[in-house]
Amino acid sequence: MKRRNKQFVQNITVPEKLPLMQEIYEMLIAQKDGATSGEIYIKFNKYSTRYIREKIKNLKDMKLLSSKSCRCHWATIYYGVKK
Image 1 (cartoon, rainbow, N blue to C red):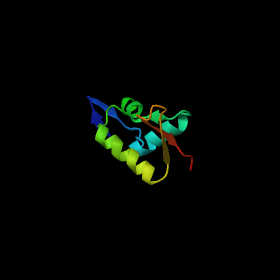
Image 2 (image 1 turned 90 degrees about the horizontal axis):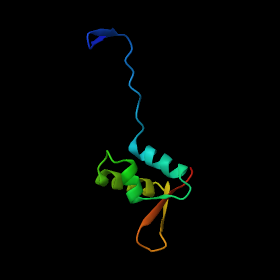
Image 3 (image 1 turned 90 degrees about the vertical axis):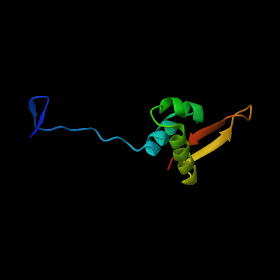
């Protein structure tokens, strides 16, 4: 038993979080039209942009993401590739 806030609590369970790479991958699989890096940054705003870019790069190296340029050839649109 652990004491917390002057009350006895028997089982304190904290839900496990998914790794960021898995969260990004599942988000891109769920979106049929893909997402730009800006949309990914907005969705996962509690992480730094550098960390998110690193995870996107790792997913591309593992061939779990495909990327295409948008019609204006400015932004890159990322699509999830099913395993």
